[in-house]
Amino acid sequence: MLQPVHVAHKSLADYTHLVGRDVIDEIRALAEPLKGLRVVHVSSTAFGGGVSELLYTLVPLMRDVGLECDWNVIYGQDEFFHATKQLHNALQGDPQDLSEDQWAIWHGYNEMNAEQLPGDIDICFVHDPQPAALMRLADDKARGWLWRCHIDLSSPNPATIERLLPFVRDYPHSVFHLRDYVPTGMRGQVHIVPPAIDPLTLKNMALSPDDAAFVCQQFGVDVDRPLLVQVSRFDPWKDPLGVIDAYRLAKESVPELQLALVGSMASDDPEGWEYFNATLSHADADDDVKILNNFNGVGAIEVNAFQAQADVVIQKSIREGFGLTVTEALWKGKPFIGGNAGGIPLQVRDGETGFLVDSPHSCGRRCVELLADPGLGRRLGRAGKEHARRNFLTPRYLRDYLRIFSAMADQA
Image (cartoon, rainbow, N blue to C red):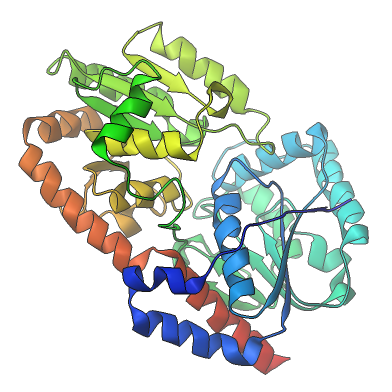
């Protein structure tokens, strides 16, 4: 059975002081003719990744402006999520395609979920490749269909994208983070909408320095010594092993340096534990490397505290759909170093709002530079926070979707 996800109430008015009344008024005007529109979001998990974080804010705000909005999570067992993890990796460039059995598993679970999808939907909003076959299998259950791709499709495995494309190319509307991610052959209307963070969540609200320090101390961090932090899933594309290498290079110049790798384990990522253990092994029992996840008691407040306490925040991804953890760090005004990949350069203007790097060596060198020059870090942090405020906060994200819904309503 599809699992409904329950979300808390949110009010758009609460964001006025952050984005300005003009933006809020524009959103209300866009929403007025859409009131009563039935929108159903479909995703693969309710926790542990950027998609779920986005929906925990987007769904209640869509309700607040008058839409009848629900969120359902598809049914899947381990065999399905192993197949879809390989699908995710292959679409981001892994040379290994799914086996025929894995493709059959993916299709079979899509058939099961298509049968359970409720009918009489105005817009069925399908997220990512896991449930991407739903429109082809249950076209009659919704008057409008929208596929949202949250991953980097700029250089997919050719065999994988060829196999997936027939299931996604005919969506009347599709949404990608960047134009470079749009695969050749999409037939419907393509929209470019970068994601955004909710500045009012526990993860992004302002923490006092004392509170941030207190939380980090509970995990063994010496708050009187410099700290590097990366927050991300334990995944080869996030390159935590490369971050450890960068830390070791920086530690040669800054012997008192510490590193925290903070992540969450998601239900649709069965390989996560394998890579978590690989990361532990690579750290080689270094007491100054803290490797933590949600099973160690790390939740939203703890992530916030580590980002706030960090002297430098890193996201050294080698593939990255967008990188909400980048936005989170910028919003906190922290000196930032990111991999020159995917959606990170959209947020980080090299030398203006942070630094972009291509290797552990360059990452380590930039860490040393920022630790040696706090004034530079503060300048980059201030510019990054303003860049995030103008471009990557939730109300802008909601506004972009309301514009798409308006276009869909006009075409109905």
